Image 1 (tube, rainbow, N blue to C red):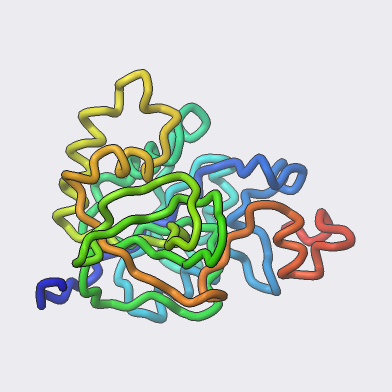
Image 2: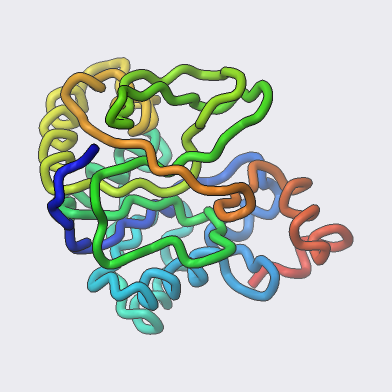
Length: 243
């Protein structure tokens, strides 16, 4: 299905620039990635998992309330990169801000919660993590060819694998994506696009494979209610939990 080449991860890039409007009023005071969940700060849990997996370099791209992330450089020796356009553009601008680090790279959302450590220092192929929906979903659903290369992405579907969580870009994908991103960056229709949407528009030039995970491994909290169901401490006075 894939080549026999093993790819050693060079780094991980954690996207942490956004405001997370659906988490207001909590996000008025604290970026989503710095929320404590079951006794651990979201982004710190992910950093510790990456370090435990032997990932040699971690880059955190900040924007909203960026000074609140400064302590991570001392505590975990991460590299902080500020995205000055986080409030004007979507998350592709964070990829652009970290462009000099793109290589064999994990690209992660700082607010994902992995119930077990899914990171490895050596990866078989470039991929997008996916979970399976046994019924209808409004998520980004994936079609693949016989080799499990992603060939089509549709918004919504049934009984489908859908995008959720981290991705791994090999150096070839990083080069190809950055070339496309530079070409479209200043076009009027680009500023509101997720990097995933730019990828979807160029599937013929950008090669990622499907990597599947069982339920319960990759969690994403889209609302305060979802977070409160996972962490009961948020059911009473969530503002009291903030740093």
